Image (cartoon, rainbow, N blue to C red; front, top):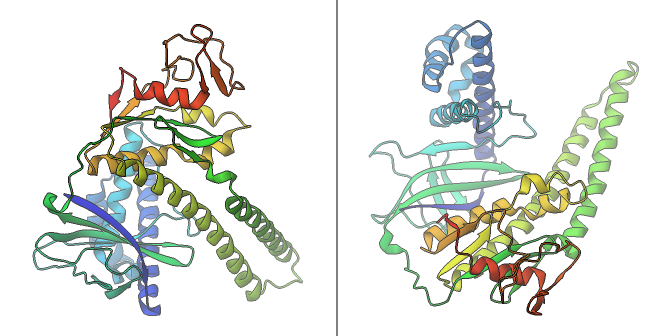
Length: 397
């Protein structure tokens, strides 16, 4: 069984330099692969696969261009992985599942340093407080004892090191025995979950999880972010004026101040994302620990909801798809059946008591009142009960 672990790492300046160079080369190779395929296509040629591009890069391009020899100075497996990742992006584009691969920018990159156990002799050792990474040697772990130690029951297959703001994170894929997982015995009935904007999640067992984006902590961080973004914008405008006026020199201090301000904005973005992710992780953990027989959610049309300019920001900040993905992964590990109901299922309009459908129900009506039997309940709670008892559904996990 493969299990992923992610934690923050503490690096020396030398290790940071190696990671930055490796990530930089991976970004350059990705962009070069996209540009090379565009040139081949314009010339009337066929698509160049990742394997063929890697051979051409190492055996033809770099030997004929000595100034590009720095590509081979970093961990080779990370460079090869960047090429194959881009090839998968091309495949998704050809299948109509995604847009054409975009060029990676230095400031907006989701590129990481990849390492792998590719033969029997290579062993990625892990101890309580440190892990041995190829080309970096021993790396200190901030969270001690989180990643299992290397033994016959736990084998680290691969991993990545990524950078967010000024922090570095390690993600590893560990192959471990199924016997190490504790089996979940279902002791409770199923749970229906109605996701919303007023409250994030309303459960059929009566529990309600509030919208974290309405909390004072998030609002304070968003206010700080707006201020820091305005400062960054003013610094960029000041630099543009300097470049236009030839008599004003573009100082090195100006560029460094912009970089400092960019880092402040990145840190605030990360704090906001971490707060929202932490809230969702806690909700998912609580749901699984109740050991329900099944969990039922609704297939929300998030793309359609985002078209409403009054609700688009609120919908985006709720991260419904991320919550669904986390719940799906956790249910798979805990062997809990996750059901998804069609988006056209009228969960809010059905009376849970008599089953009558209230066609004229408005969005402003927060209390559900059945005209047939007189049943009264909170609109979202009634929807969660209907989702729990839904007969037509699709099993995700």
